[in-house]
Length: 563
Image 1 (cartoon, rainbow, N blue to C red):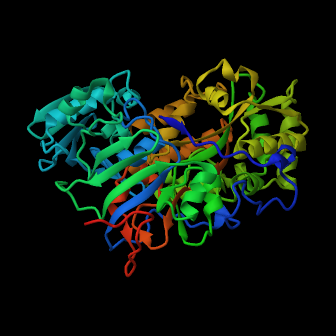
Image 2: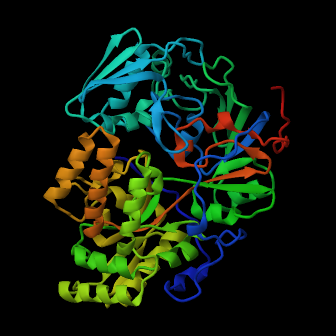
Image 3: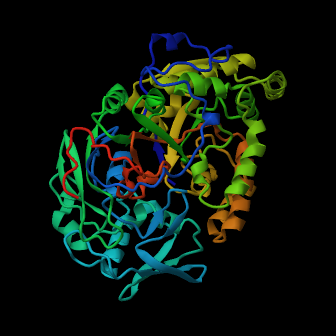
């Protein structure tokens, strides 16, 4: 499983230093970036798509929150790179706007037995240089992803063999049944490249000035480092013709992102930071669309041991003011949540996961009440208070600062002491990867998303032998159920196992969930079409961007051009 941190929210005004959550009247707090209407995430309707576009566009200006580090996602997998490249490169499976997956460049998929996956490939696909996609290209791409030096290598740990078994056929053999492999093929592990182009570029593949080696509805036309990146419709595309001819990407963060959209200098963008999205809510001339995402916020106990006792962790969860965090830390755009993955992970069996989520709400109340605080104090009394204050690790970003203050306030409510350790953002990121960096904190204010639309793409983090199981949670029943779920190919049966797993995870409070974070799409009035969900990282959203029926606005500062 890959856990990708969300962008840090911008620094709040000086008043945040004295903020103590839990006081009455914290809801409806203004956003640090200014503007925007007060939001309540519980009232937001998460919809996977926007209305279908009918009108064509010439050039559209699109915002990213960062410039891509690389367009080779095997070496540098970032949200910015995926947002661009998903329109240019295609995968064997495709993540849909509703977060389900289906075969894509693999025309048909069969399983002769539980450990064999046969991919029958499309024979009508051409790369942007005109060459036909072959089984050799697909096999080479899969083996490149599986290379131990590449970011997707862990997705292939259960693969025994990959081979070309026909002119348009690849067969994958597993050591044991693998329920999540096809979902990985809808992510970066399923990207298909033209082998000869990648080999010719060598280490420069994915850098400015190099071709894309892909087969998608758009091709890379230019990348001016530090300025802009342009993709243009590929006229030889094997599938449906995109409505928009060209997309020019530029990048801005925080207030610059807000200003570019507000002034009309940009036509749209996916707002990765909840604070940016909240600042744009209700702005004249813009529409904001909220979709399901796997992203979430949670408190992650560390090896240091201040929260080693599950009773203390449960007590902290009961005392935490999640509603106050959502309002004061994230402009009302995150929703109090009882599990460590957002609802976008429900790529199948949605009713089962929604019902289980509802039952878990009692373990992570939106606001602490008298009964919950009484239970929390009893848990602390029976377990015995930690000898030292609990150290909360954060950086100075708005959201994390608010959460850290909320944790300290919650600890005080149940008779415990907490201190906040604030470090620079670059140093904060080391907490995720370095036990040494975590050695001075007891709990990390964490935020991230997972790439798979399956809750089981997350819960292997708490296996007894997982390097992400910092607190040392050990349970034979948990380990056994997780591994059984990973081998269960039937979605209904796997969902039942996943519900068992998440309940045991919640009962032990391995991590302390705080909120889910929706995907947010911001569009200039008159534009529509792209998915609003997290699928925009893996689905060709630009190909569906166009104008609303009866509307044909000219994109900002760019003539429509010939269609």
